[in-house]
Length: 593
Image (cartoon, rainbow, N blue to C red):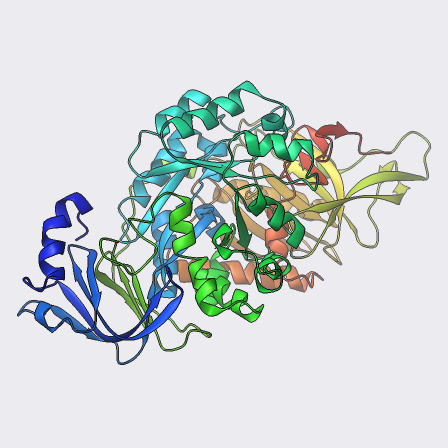
């Protein structure tokens, strides 16, 4: 059981001095010290009250009749991995399900921003996520969402977050700071509410998460940094990453299910020789299929090593650097006295097989098998009834009327970019049939269906890059950040059928082809998450991805690209319940040019 350090201090001293037995001793390990970037052979590690008492050559004096002894047999002892920026909801799981999925991969600390559920249920949704997070066997810290809506005036959410609610959440146990401040134009312009949220966070002595999704590194960037953001994960190039580090921000390099931003930035360390203390690894968004089958932070660290990073530096960027960034370097992030006893045993520093995981002094996983319970809270019934369309939609709701007498029309098109969050602002000349603009070639229909207030509203547009063929549709209630329903398809009838199906089951992701359901992953909690076991959710998620492939898509992770089509804080073009949004100028555009 983990005790606060102040309560464990006296016993830690006794154990470290060799005068008292430990709860657990790991013998004969190789100590990976992320403070000095040393790999030191022949060390024992003693644990008491969930904390590390000492790392010494011989801990035999700490072995009593009730001490658990683990033989490292020359394996490496690493600190447990930390994810510095992520959204639990992107895993399609509640905090309990997410913890169960990532513990066997060596993740022992998570800093999560539940702004997805905040857009659906507001502060109450954030509190539910925090309540389930704090009872997990690993450390799950909550960042209070800063922007719901993410771009005021350009989208409508189910609930809005106020500055008073931000100040309230800063007093909750388990709240580590402010979630990513996505309204970067507001901060740069001196918006009163945005600055007040940041000030309340700083006044509480906590960390402000950043999100500056613009290539402009001039005055707007300078103003944003001056506003108080401490980090940024929206960097996609070496130059952008270096610019953040130079300004004293932590550059968070992400590898999620679809965001591959590490390789382009790691050269700042491997080639430019910059101090890696200013860089942190994270995932941002990983769906359940990735978590169950590919890994979590161990996957990110392996990728960084494959990109030429020294293994110990890569581990440091997912442990000590993260802890230091959040002011927790005396609490976690390294295998040193007083810290939480979060330990990984591995036989290889490059391939990183996670052979044993200890969290807060308890063995929680071995050889990929979870050994502890991850408890669920009792999610209220209304959290499972969040899809409110107001009416039954028909195929005609997804039609775009052409100007009178036109044989073709020039329209704006959202251009999807594989493995990246930004889109391109494109145009296309499309044919008109029976007075309706019809997609052709790479261009598909896209629609946003309002699902929070039951207005019956539908906004239509066009998207390219998915490669869909035949008569099909993909619908999802996961649509960052407002989380209305997004429907993409080549067939308006299929779009109507997919929409009706998600309304019936309370949310999720579904694929229809030729009028029939191909695959569905049900996400009944807020239309974002499932409380089913991660392997079951992963199975259904992979079935959806396979169905998307059957419809002609060859992208690495089309589902994640679908989920960002309404994200009106990342350039260049998006769709919202207000219309087509130019995210370079933060203004609404006409669909027809």
